[in-house]
Each structure stands twice: as C-alpha cells, then as structure tokens.
Length: 452
Image (cartoon, rainbow, N blue to C red; front, side, top):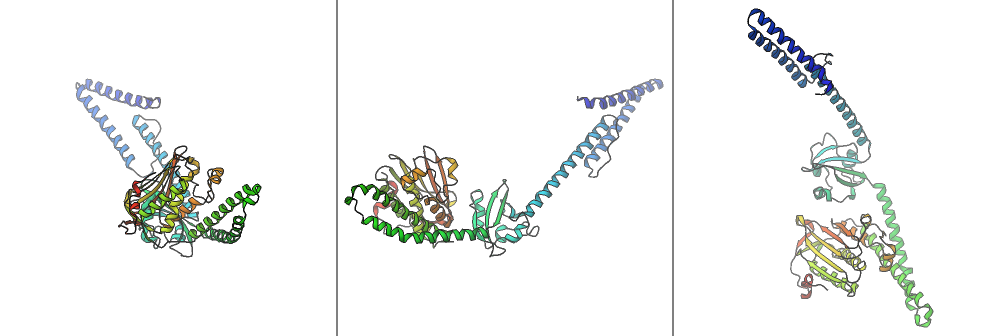
C-alpha cells in the first residue's frame, strides 16, 4: 500500500474497530451481543453505501464541486483524489482548447486554402477562410458537401480516387474565379482524412511563361547560326591538313550536341505550352517493335534487348509524343548500361484496369538521393558520364511532361550497381482494346517474344 494511503485507511479501520467494539460491549451489557454487533455492522454498511453514492454522483456530475475537507478516512481520500484528477483533466482540456484555437487562427491566417476531406465519401469536413477565395468553399455552409460537386468544373474525381498516388495539379483555373490560377496537392495524413491544399500560383505561372518564351525564342534563334556552323564544318576536309583532323572532329561532335540540345529545348517548350493533346488510338504492337529496333540499332549488339507485350491492349493518346517519351527511356537504358548488360522493355497490365510500360536495365544504377530530381531540366547524376554518352539532360523532363499530358505518371526505382527501372503508369481511361492491325508486319506481331 502506498504511504500516502496508509493514514486514511488506518483511520477507517480504527473507526470500524471502535464502532464494532462498542457495539459488542453494549450488547454484552444488555445480554444480546450478536444482535448488537449485527445492527452496528448494518449501520456501518449503510454509511459506506451513502459515501459510495456520493462518489458515484461526483463521477457523473458535470458541475464544478468544491474541494473536499481535509482529513477523514478512506472515502474522504478518494474524494480528494477524484477532485484532483478532475482538476487535471479540466486543465488539459483547457490547454487543448487553447491549442486548437491557436491552430485554427493560424490556418485562417494562411493565404493558402486548406480543406479536410473524408477519404471514403470525399466530402468536406472543414476548411479555412482561404478556401472561400480560391475554391469557393465556405465553412460551415459546405460541411458534408461532396467536394467533386462543389469544385466543378475541376476534374478531380479520378484525382481524389488516386489518393496517395495523386500527382499535384500544378496549374488549374479556380472554381471561384477563373482568372485565378491555382495548384492543388492532396496530402493523406491519416487513414480516414485527407488534406487538400490549394495555392495561388498566378505570379509563378506568369514568371514560368516568361521563362518558357525566353527559352523557346533563344532556342529558335540558335537554330540558324548552328546550321551555318555545322554546314561549314561539313565542308572542311581533314585530309587537307591532318593536324586539324582531331579539332574538326571535336567541333563537329559539339555542334551536333548543341543542335540536339536546341531541338530538345524546343520540344520541351512545345510540350509545356500545351494543356492537352489530340487523342488517337496508339497501336502498342508496332510501337514496341519500333522501340526494339531503335534499341538494337543504338546498342550495336552490345546488350541483350528483350521486349515483352503482356498487356495485349493499346493506349489512347498522341503516338508521336508517346514514342518520344518511350524512346528517351530506351535510349537512356542503352547509354547507361555497360556492354554485356540486359535491357527489358515490358508492357504489362496494372491494377484498376490500367497498364504500365517499364524499361528495366542492369546498368550503373542511381543513388536514392538523386532519384527525386531526375526529371528536372539539365539535372545530371554524373556530368562526365552524361557528356561521354551524348545526353542533353532534358530527356526525362520531356518524358515527365508527355506523361502529364496523358494523365500518367513516371515511377523510378534503382539500386546502385544493379540497375534501374523506369515505369510509365497509365490509368484505365487510357486503355483501348487492341484490334488486329492489317498493316502490321508478321515479324512485328511476335516482337514481344524476341530478344537478342
């Protein structure tokens, strides 16, 4: 028994002993000791039941009661402990309320829109004041309303369904004011709740447009002088002066690399300027055959090239842009895989009725710290290796923009020394049932079974 409880219990036991002893003595005096003892025990039991009833009332009462008197027995000590526990609970509740008020004040002061969404029903639970300006939502008016319906015409139904895999919407018109450009990000912070964050990106979009125009204009203007320089270099014959042969060769290589860089910049600027693509049925059988031939031509027999068509479906999108993206991934796999390595291009079904095209290599691999930045323009894991292989640093940026225009995403996994896998994931709305292509060459129909 803890020391703090010994005195009250001792006093209670002493009281019981005194009362029962007095009852026995009084019973002996009148010649009926046992009835007297029984009456005293019943009286003590009644007294304890009354104290227990008071304790129960204190537990159920929601009013603040005065602290119990000091001293007393075990029941008085229980009342004091109960009073102290309730005071501590009230203190914690008061601090929690103050913290909640402070957090709500901070959320209200933020210029960004914060919306708490129920994961299962996609209905609004709470939003701050910024949500009124950017999204047209008001709390408590819209509490319990469907977020998909309230944020029309934003196409966020599939986006919300993606949950943790939802890519941020970088630029969209605000439902409250089409003149306001916003970005949307979905943050799952519990099993049942999501946080939707909307931000005004109008200024950033204007700056981005200035940058795009600058890059596009400069790249376009560089085309002509590069063409002239390249033409004059082709006219030079190294045989006229053998000492100039390595210099002329290096100048030709660098001019070609500069020309490729300009072409990639123009392609990236063109993709960034587009909000959507004109969709068509993209036959994946011929596409995979083309990728295999390109990989073999670039490899020159130095790698084992395997193409697997496991999905048996086609895609809805731009054939030109998808070929550009897939070709970039295959070319990177060939460039960064040592001789004797293996490259697998696999088109396979995915969960939810979608499909994935993955390019797997057994190359050098990429450190984990670099993976999140690979799709940035000109970002290089190894500058010297990129220069040796002739890369421009824009290939993965082009891939990312092409996939975004197709509502798809790029996933990258890699292990240093064991290779990398780049996976393009397409949703079910991009899947088209494959029909036999009468123009497909018989050899291409079995491209998925061939490897070198």
